[in-house]
Length: 216
Ligand SMILES: N[C@@H](CCC(=O)N[C@@H](CS)C(=O)NCC(=O)O)C(=O)O
Image (cartoon, rainbow, N blue to C red; front, side):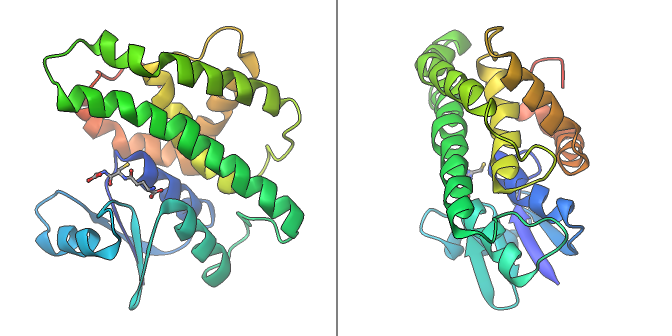
């Protein structure tokens, strides 16, 4: 049985969970930071950052959410193919996955990290730190969505985009001049695999250092 180590509120854990849920892949969820010292130690030792998620398949430990999805596509395939077979298409899907990790998710996480580092600081100053780069990313994605046509499927891109846009919009609202992006975020959150992540994370919303808005 596959095991996924992570946390229900963690954006990168969602990324891997969405792929597992989308294909109905059987797995056991092992929560981190919930008093399971074995799980915490396993994650701490699995990769150089000690971060989660980590997928365990027998003796094989796979870290980095993108690599987990790559691994699932290869070793535990299901009806949804996350990375296209066509190598040229696969290059583009992997590039867009990088956009959501590096230019949305990780930027959003800088605001969260700032508030954790300095709990006394104003939420607004954490937002100020990431406002310009997030708005720049939003506007790029808004233009890209005009030509992105995979919308009925769940690929690596949807797995990356759903959690990153979910949380980024909590930090800096997607502006009115990005209507396609607003609609795509709503579409992603309505996908059953994503909706399950959103619902499973509800009990942990009070963890969000900038304060979770009363929506979604
Ligand atoms: N590049 C990693 C990032 C993973 C990551 O940032 N995980 C966060 C949770 S969303 C984490 O482990 N935070 C705890 C820590 O950094 O100790 C991936 O794609 O899996």
